[in-house]
Length: 190
Length: 190
DNA sequence: ACCTGAACACCGTTCAAGT
DNA sequence: ACCTGAACACCGTTCAAGT
Image (cartoon, rainbow over all chains, first blue to last red; front, top):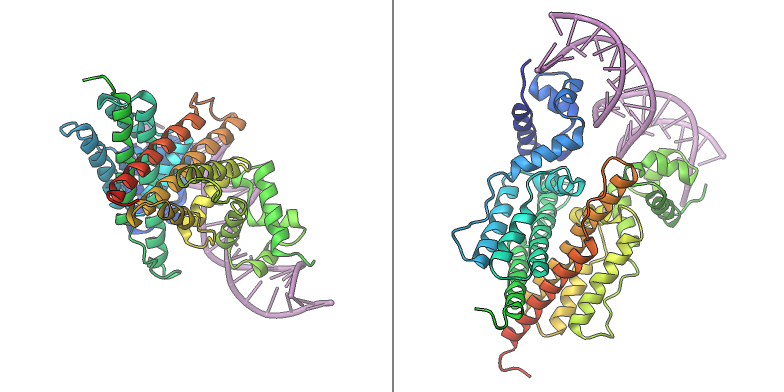
């Protein structure tokens, strides 16, 4: 009795950390919180909303590194986002569906886009970089976390893939593209 | 009696087309095929494998446009992949989890990477472009299809986002980056 | 080779009611 | 404001058995 949204989200994060997304059911979450399943529906209208709140929670501490140059700032944000996701198993999947549902509040893509705009990119290119970075980070981390979950369960062997390298390589291609777009947009400007 | 894998996959695709991924349950799929749920487990070891086979099916006709220049070929492949996904509701989500599970056979990322390598990029850059293109296409299409599914159900209003523009903008940034990486790699070569 | 019957151990969600 | 009891309408999967 007397649970808050934050208590529930904390328990949800613990289930991901100690088990997996498959184990993050409303029934199990309720048990963990010490309540009956239906009690959760006083705090959240449905599971999807709970997951969206969790997604915001998971990315709450990712900042856009305003102290760096625009391109280093973009890179640092991407790296920070990836680190935040890797810290909690299956969190990338949670963020992906939260963003897709439109229920998430933390608009990292928007903030990345604003940062790129500040750096001198055209609005179109700025949005393009932000989109590319977000989709890359989430998508690749989903793959990595799904694999390690399956390895942990012994259902599949190690993939031999170097996700860190794949991430860095793709990120640098996007940043190269961003710089090229800036040069094209900047002709004649200071 | 006498159903083949292809019959089942065809029925699965029809469920996506006419309803949604939420409706694509093994029980419903069985009903559609005219069989009891457990009969499906003669054809597939589990639901995940069935979805992986469906994912391969959905992307079977995407080719890497070998008649075009390397960068136009990459663009055409990405556009073709997106078109194939948009043709079937929720298919991007299916492909995403199939790729993450490692059960998919169609290695589009590998083929894109080979194409970029042929075009004169370094192995690292080639893999980076392929990764960026695949994650962008899948991730953004997941968002688009999830939204349109939610709009169809009336649970959410139109987002006002222009996914086509977001896709093109991000894709061009990646291709700009690929060309920049090629120039850097090509110094002194023909 | 391909399917059924029957069961196991679960889900998310709703609604009226309690305190 | 926050929770319980009881129920509804589902899931994926397994196993022995049928033809």
